[in-house]
Amino acid sequence: MAERLIVVLLGKQGAGKGTQCSALSAQYGIPHVSTGDILRAAVRDGTELGVQVKAVMEAGDLVGDDLVVALVKERFAQPDAARGALLDGFPRTLAQARALDAMLGDERVSLCVNLDVPTSLVVERLSKRRVCQECGAVFRADDPAGVSGTCEKCGGDLIQRSDDQPDAITTRLDAYERDTAPLLDYYRERELLVTVNGDQSVEAVGADVSSALRTRGLL
Ligand code: AMP
Image 1 (spheres, rainbow, N blue to C red):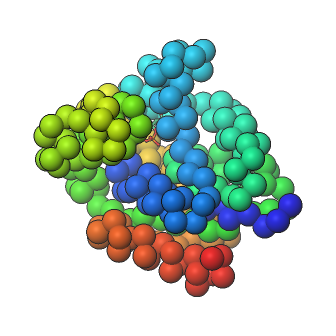
Image 2: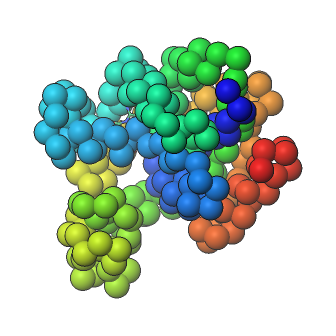
Image 3: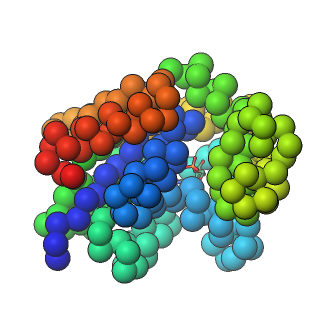
């Protein structure tokens, strides 16, 4: 198989992983793979998987490694993944990072980009985040769209995610420190880690990510 670009975006919830992945995906034609989006769609559609994970997600806890790894394997089998993947929210534990390496076999992760943002800022971003129930587009409560409650892209209703409520935010940030932050060392040891300052405009962060990919000869 031709070499694929497999980029892992790491960073606290609200660091901007989804925003950057969707911009990079549009720019480079590589699919944005968000396990959170896949799981939320299952909950919304009331599938067996959705029923199984709903309560865990609402509380802000992590769903099981085996389940998430199986979802990513399935996603990688789809034709567009032949170009690679921008991984958002996966891997999130060391077990998932090892499973991803095993899944890739002779291929490897191309780069891991850590979007670094102070906790106080992500708490503010998460509590002000409003998402479109239909297309998943993200707005801020004090944007014109957030104030009107209507998505500027598709006209869908904007809602506050149940896991963006204060208790769930705390649980999720604790889970990040406990389960996900160790992945920084995992990728650093493999010389695959680049840290980008996530406390900049969306465009400036995107430019830094693209430049990191270019420096490594990945674009
Ligand atoms: P996110 O949109 O990435 O913040 O994910 C929302 C929720 O989905 C998380 O709080 C978890 O409950 C679940 N989730 C998403 N990705 C994973 C993962 N890789 N491992 C475990 N749980 C996940």
